[in-house]
Image 1: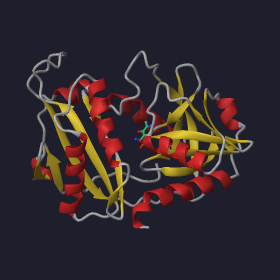
Image 2: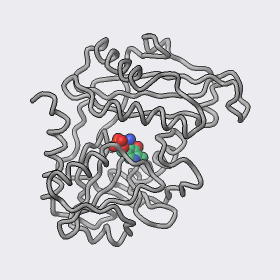
Image 3: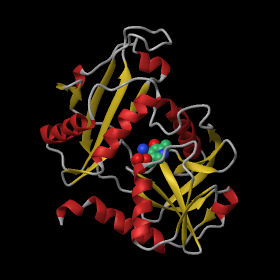
Length: 288
Ligand code: PMP
């Protein structure tokens, strides 16, 4: 990856109170640590304003529900907590990481009687992405079918596949991994969704078996506003390799051009650049 999300967080919001980061430790017996009963979010603030905050907080609650536990805060309370943390830390361009997990009362596989917790960290974040685009390698790992896991949740358990795929891509000299699903259709990247442009039409995989990203949804809306033809479809690797343009979307990546997949290059950039500009504008719209 060409940017890092290393946390130099100093203050944590945890279960309703602010505590110094060094006091925010959890028990070795935490259910979420052993069984991945844990969900999280990645959110960005631009010049002090948090982008798509309500949607992210709603997704945190929905992801927890998909894993069978509930979060004891409303969307409004979580939004308020995120904004208060930014204010406390005096952050302007920031990455915000809420995480929710099942606690330490029991290591039984059942979550019965196990408490749920929420913590939020935030830190200054201004990634520099390569202007010439990312080189992706096709992962040997696959996304599971939705019958195997609640793949629409932003759940910690799904990230083992992202970690393995990303590490494999880096070891092979790529910037990131492209993942296929269990039927060998194009799914996503390790922490981003994928789009391609072919003959002027924007295509993206149907969100089945991977996270339907908020940036992906925003990008589809922006594309429609720009009058682009958009299509959600099953995409084969060969479809992708014969595209005119390929790009990734995600909170951290925003809209990031892909220069190659497995060595096949995509020199065109016109529509990607238009969408990048529109997305940038959308993140700063509150300043107008
Ligand atoms: N897929 C995966 C696996 C991700 O981790 C992310 C980043 N959250 C995305 C897609 C993009 O999601 P979003 O646009 O909501 O950040």
